[in-house]
Image: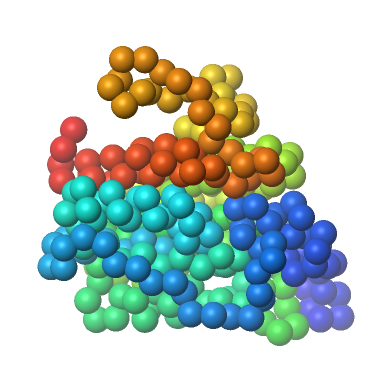
Length: 264
């Protein structure tokens, strides 16, 4: 941990223009106001069914979260609430506090299941207080971040309700690629020790046959008789295209529905 007198360099604080250039994709920082705003809220599916909360950063606020919530609500009949806010995560509660937001959302009636996706905005220094940070390279970074993951999980599923945590996909920028791989190991470990919690690994879902980053991948056609190659990543190597968001939403939706319904 560092004090104000020995604070992290600017690149450990995600507000500078150089930081936005390489993290701006999945993080949604580019062009975004840094003033806190209420998280976006949407509702899908019939009221009164199995209640699912979907929360996260720009991946949830954007196409992936939209297609996933629609599929779970309109196709499978779940009562889905979606909260997404770009440029957020667990690293910077001074910008947007997801612990408080989770408490507000859950209230006195926890959702039957929750799905979370963070990561891209969290591969930086961790804000502790006005004058204290834990830098990405500090020994205590991983343990502190794991505590935050566990704390959010506890707020969303206080009595062992079902929890899904979606990992980060392979990335083209080498620095971001290495960093999101690290946070994925934390998500996997924290979900493994919680009852009724599941880490959904999408690392290779949007990768090429060799497991490396790919702009285009083979996906089945609608009739399932063949495959076709589609562009799944945007030009920055971080964002998803519309097709990529659909691929991810289809996969995650199947995992969630299978777990909640007992379907194969």
